[in-house]
Image 1 (cartoon, rainbow, N blue to C red):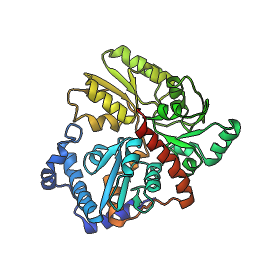
Image 2: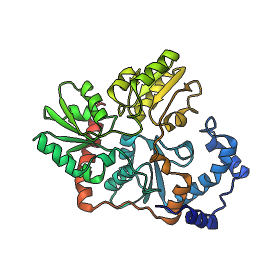
Image 3: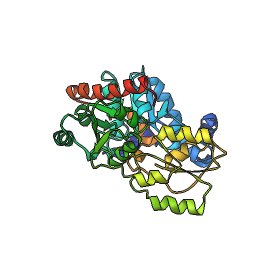
Length: 350
């Protein structure tokens, strides 16, 4: 666990991080990407951190990969690459910098390390875990294989390196149906997200999909009644759900897709009002680029993603602490599953 008091004292010895209107104005071009959701007073607080991080990135030969669930000051202020799990995995294979800072949860940093064993991969807070990843183990994979002999195991990238190593291929929410459809077996095991598996089963009816009993704490909290009630009160709102939501929630939506799919849909359709049934930062991060769209309604925040802050990112680059390591033998097996996913995603239309 990070000692925030000691961390702040160390950073204050090396950087002036007090709120600064001058630094905010100097970096106004960055603020312009998020000025609908980050007020000028807040930007004056964030700007010194953003300026220090961006300077330190160049000095460390570092690149920052940020998931779509990051807060806007990270997503727009310091990230070099943003995207969903598949996009970040693909981009991780292209990185030339010596250091990767993963602004996301721990399994994402592990994936970057698996794909870049010779590089330094930092996670700003090692406690940025994932309830879904923690729901399945390599022993669980073995249990599923014993129950369904000969069935290939398709594991979500939201899993540990050990689980990836025990699987045949990985998938993300954006390519899960494509990956499952490409398997030779009539029966396919999907782990660990039962809701993603159930939603994919409707897209790939010619496969028998069996699943592990896991779920995301963000998406499983939405209910179909919530969406019906919202639509009753505001029938013009377009409802857009992530496929980690329960199937009856997805059935109530106008569209369901991965985080990148959701962004593509909203950019393409430009609805007057949109309700994103996913993590809260999704709407926040795309609202400035879509001023004609009003984002409304409830969302659920991921407590793990929110452990990644500007302060912790600056600390990781300053101290070079928080390096993610994966056992080489485990990494080699996991790399096969991840690279199979990337290769299949590139070869076949999604």
